[in-house]
Image (cartoon, rainbow, N blue to C red; front, side, top):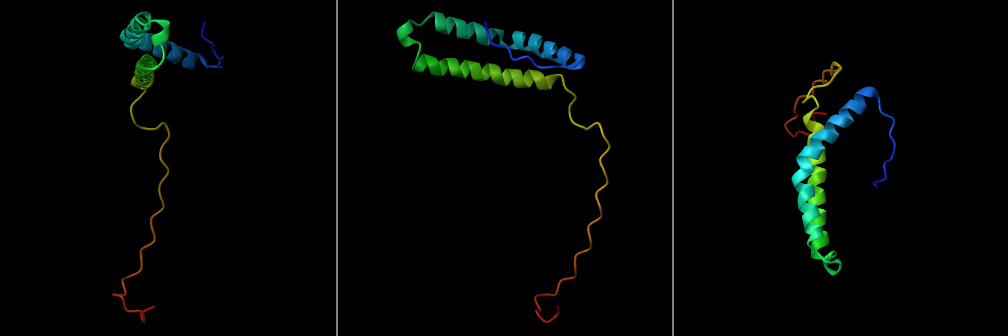
Length: 103
């Protein structure tokens, strides 16, 4: 059984976690099948080396899908608070055309 680190979530965060979990299970199903078939097809002596790298590639793909899945349900762009006005820049001094005696 996988180790689960408990996290205190608000009800909204719990709902979001469940949405991500369900979407990720669907999105990663083919990758998990590929992973299971790869591991089932290898004898113990072939689990490491090339097979290990293939496993890592599949797991990285699942991780990328997890991030994409988490972002898909979130509002795109924008912020919730109004931006504060930026102070106007002070006008820069006029050019002296390279004449060192002007200053």
